[in-house]
Length: 141
Image 1 (cartoon, rainbow, N blue to C red):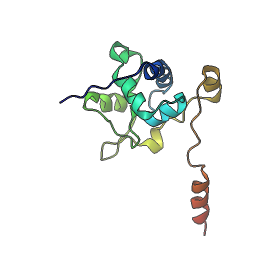
Image 2: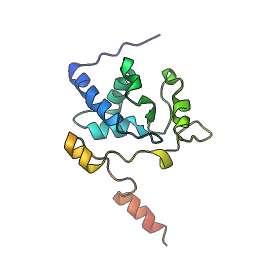
Image 3: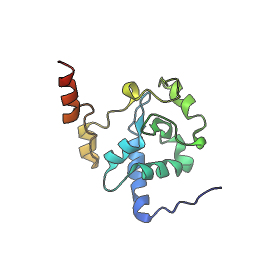
């Protein structure tokens, strides 16, 4: 059974911006649907990034769709046949559960210069939240 998803014109307007960001993810690195959504901003969410990746059509040779994974580093769709192999060929490693090692291969996002020039947001720095700082301080004692 297949379900039909209706994509509004407003949502479709995000697709080109999503593709432009995905094109920035370098070989050997991966990003998540959510990270791409944060960078695109303006009401974009992880679901919309997934829809955009599924709507690439002939542009799959231009946009490195294989570098976009779910939040746990997993491959989300059965249509992703060959995705793991493409990533392995780029040097991305997976754990024994088939999840990409995000702590090693996750893209930190675009440079501030590129983001500013093209009107995108930066990803928040990982591991620098107040809660993370508090946890690291607790480990000292």
